[in-house]
Length: 254
Image 1 (tube, rainbow, N blue to C red):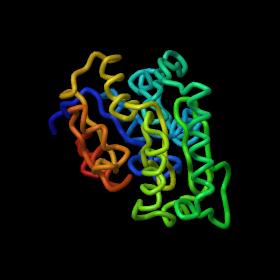
Image 2: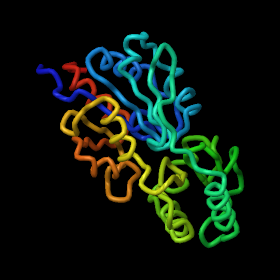
Image 3: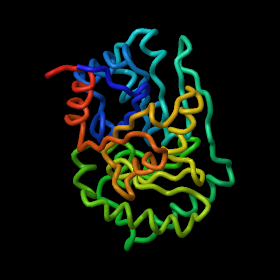
């Protein structure tokens, strides 16, 4: 089979390489490791760097040479980490203290509005996480079980309602539905498209040399901004389709 023509393949994490905040499985890790022998690979997600370590890096068995082809874009592309004998942060579009205070105030208002957010009987960890360059609201808490997350808002209606109220309160910020129960808030214009363009510049690549794989490329989805970059976008429904796509690119029948 002919070599896949793209030089860089960027993957969304939650819902694409794995389920929400769940670790990648052995098969996915092995396929990605093999792909790193042939291509540059990036992973972009709303999760912070520590979540990347727990969910992704801690399950990879790549060599230093392979890691040199891997690029990490946590918090929706607001940060970039590259391998230089260890993981080094290249940039961070951090929110200022005043900006964080404004966002926190808006979220406190949401928590007082039962018509917008009805607090569940059980909360798993913090509802709000300061990720430096992104504030994330998780309706069931940051550590909620995967099954509970996917059952809470399968149609996205609850998150979209929360996000619409926050956009009205925070017109100078980007507010996006992300994950299975979360809403992410960053600087205006700093999203997955921003992260992709920053990585293009860093690697000296053109959009037609890049592919993006995500499960939320539909209008309003947290992967949708990737379409604006001009890169080749591949929509998947979950990790199984992603693995099949990687196997296809590697020339594997199974």
